[in-house]
Length: 396
Ligand SMILES: *Cc1c(COP(=O)(O)O)cnc(C)c1O
Image 1: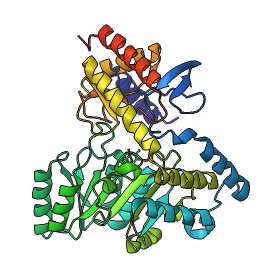
Image 2 (image 1 turned 180 degrees about the vertical axis):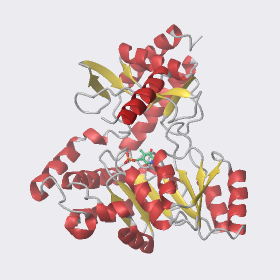
Image 3 (image 1 turned 90 degrees about the vertical axis):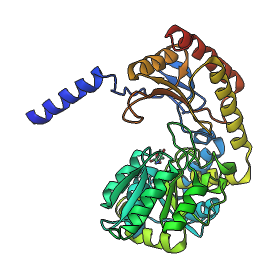
């Protein structure tokens, strides 16, 4: 190994470990359901994005197996050569129906979708106004585009208006985009889309909403844009197929000309192999389930409200969440990690989230209740939270 690489790795790893910022990965021994097995131990799982429980759904498993039998295990090529199977096209139609748009394009993941779509539309003559708490994949997509990135204070509409005015009136830029998460995954708060749309109209901003945590959760399952009835106003509705939808993949939904452009200009669509037939079939089935019934959505919210009320009553700082995402904000990184570790020893898997995923000094344990949890599981989790919270002096 190169000496300089070896030194770089060892020094930096040690620094992270000393600061309590090194993330240890615990492999899950079985399905990622409402309970999980880690190290042979059964734990109540409050850390997955499997909001509706669809990642382990029996009907979807059948669809995945059937598609594998019919098409094989791989798509065989990138979408633009001959990796586009008829089911990929059907899936994109289904996504457009789900999102209430003319068309949609799907990608291999939400992360590469942001890399792909932002940089296909924006370039170095342009500017992107970006909420300061946007997801890492948005930040990377913006950087890749070469556009000027202008950070906007988190959900601060006055700051957005001022910066939109400055960027558009300066004459320095071609296009100007505003990009935001629909639901912010570390805090569970929702973007103020009605006001964003108003400002966008005033300054002709391109609007891009990453609804990774809103789809399946907001708008009776159809997402944050639908929640506000703004399907016709938001230019680019981006989302993932890996969270509430339970499988894997990403997409952009919007007008036909936008999707036509992304199909010829987004690089992961052109240069990376399409998702497998099993993924496509399971995803289609999952979207259909979300469109057909709000039962899972309703159960998710019921569980979210229950857990939130319980944690709040115990005295935890649960922040400003407006969704089932429920952070317990602890503050100091090492304490947040210790808290999470003790929860795990007692039977709850709730991962500590620390810098750089959240700002320094706002270390937290984030709880993600799902539709698949029972009240008994949540009660047990709350009892463990109380015990560990008192033990570590977080609760009085
Ligand atoms: C998880 C997430 C992504 C990435 O989605 P994947 O499908 O997991 O790659 C993108 N944006 C946001 C806001 C996310 O939370």
